Image (cartoon, rainbow, N blue to C red):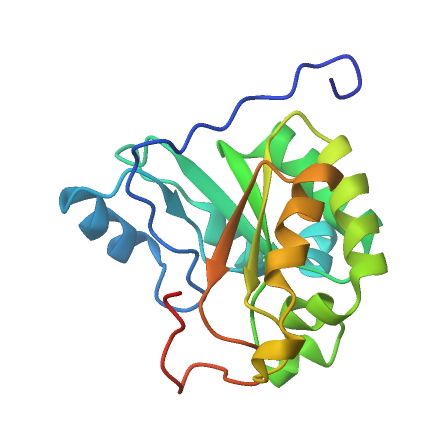
Length: 191
């Protein structure tokens, strides 16, 4: 229960999910994926601080086509209050079924501001963000992570983080099979 409102249930069972993508997950691409059998789509990643400021470019990323019957908004942010404000705004202003915190983006421009995959190394801040933001709205909150921050398998922490994310209030977690250090140019770990 959130502020007297019942938390909406998120059901991905048996559904084909389009991975949360940052630059190619635009509306035309998502529409094409829907025609090819995709059930769940995400908008492109937007910056939480810009959303709260009312940046029209960020808000344009949340356009949803009528064919998108299950749609999520993907955001990146470093502060619980910003992410919580976004959740409240999405519930009031958007036709989204859920919102997703991107903790997978390895790009320096994002991680240098404490967002994206940088949060994998700062679990106290991540816990605060997920706990506060998931309680701020009846929209389910999901989290996208990588296998960990480091390429070294012994230092990866996704296996520890996933149950904690659920306990903190995440309704689902998507896992990118590379570490932050691997970025996009190494083979994915399918195990």
